Amino acid sequence: MGPLNGYTVLELAGIGPAPMGGMMMADMGAEVIRIERAAGASALHQKDISSRGKKSVTINLKTAEGIETVLRMVENADVIIDPFRPGVCEKLGLGPDVCLARNPKIVFARMTGWGQQGPLAHVAGHDINYIALTGALYAMGRKGQKPAPPLNLVGDMGGGGMLLLSGILAALLEATNSGRGQVVDAAMVDGTAQLMWMFHGWQHMGAYDATAREGNMLDGGAHYYDTYECADGEFICIGAIEPQFYALLKDKMGLSDDEFGDQDNRDEWPRMKARLTEIFLGKTRDEWCALLEGSDACFAPVLSLLEAPEHPANKARDVYLEVDGMLQPAPAPRFSRTPSSVRNGGSDLGADTDAVLAEMGFGERELAELRAAGAIS
Image (cartoon, rainbow, N blue to C red):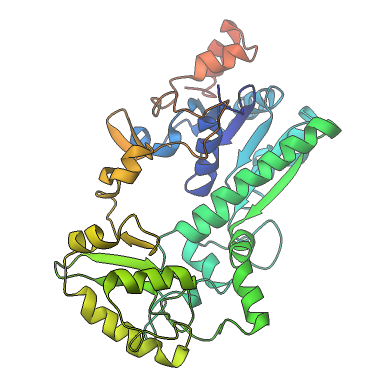
């Protein structure tokens, strides 16, 4: 049993960061009940890795009976995850005031891009927009080129799903002492700003130039912190920031002090990077792995999504697992006494409707009436 065993989470079906937070809670042992739309759900439902470990209930939120069904479920839950734009749950009759009135200990967790208030609160957006407004996107990419989107890892997942999860866990912990729930306003723009904390500090210290792209230590400006192409067209990366790791890198690669002396002389970074570019092109990725991998030179091959699960280090730690024939990341973090697990893959849409509602006190006659009214399916 995982560390969240005994907690019940209602997740209103959405995409991206909200289901990611629900997935991690399910991995940690919570009973996560995904409330799906009664119609119009994606045919790719079972291929959605974020639905693993969850139960699927289909409820028509456009009916009064459907809304009342969800509110009765709220009475039996600890958390409800709202993935909609601000005000949508209120219009449905499922806003935080209503839910907290039915269950004063409920944690009402809201996941949005721009937050619940402000001039952009009701405006559509995606990861790239949220990270653009916090300075994160501006800093990514090569000098003289346009900013490069980092997939949707920074805003949606790091600044969104992870922020949502940490907020929920903190609110649950506080509720054990106060006996009262509360609203968690998790906004991706807020989360991305949090992720940029280090660079704000460095800017104040004069150690970071926020106007430069590929001009700082961690943005590809430093020759010792970047990716390089190899003879076979594959790539490697080095991150030898600390002097002792830089010295080891030079020793293993046979780099002279004359050519690679003061590692933090920014005027020399372009020259040293150009030289490293030539050197790394002299061997294949596998040859560089044989020379540098496993040492404190802070080296790694740049692997594709398909290659990563086969790397010996990932296999040794079981970083990936297979569920219903789909390879996917294993639960994280790891717990010594109450380990997380994936109890099942994605359920058929609505497969758990009757069982879940029965566990929450709905009788057979009520279920039949709800079905007849089109409230459940």
